[in-house]
Length: 193
Image (cartoon, rainbow, N blue to C red; front, top):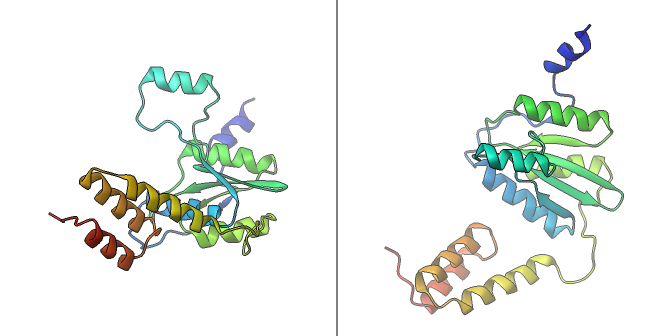
């Protein structure tokens, strides 16, 4: 009677899973890289925060508001399509809930996959018709506008510790180079402890 349900309980992944790698980068670092790359291309990208460490009340409230356990980390949308990307570090594997949700997406012809790098996300996006490999818009590249905003925020910061933190985050995110970082440290007379 429940044979079809039992087979779904242990259904193998029906979606792309990038092989494990030895890169020590965390899931967060990898995800930020993918988000930045999507934004450079002019794609719409949004992180879908889910359960994490939450109280029973918070989980119940999220569920009532439409949260789904196992939903992939990123929603990437482009004219005529959408792609869901679950990011993992070098050794991470999808949970049972993630496998079930992503198999459900595939069965609805909604493309998705588990990724560890921008290269595989870009490849899958190209396969589903996203305009990757070229910018969608001919106006100023978004990284220039973003860099101007970041530099202005650093300039306006009056607290030296906060200014230094903003500079280091901008460097870590690739917004400013090592040379630009050193110049800013000197310009604002910041000291490293």
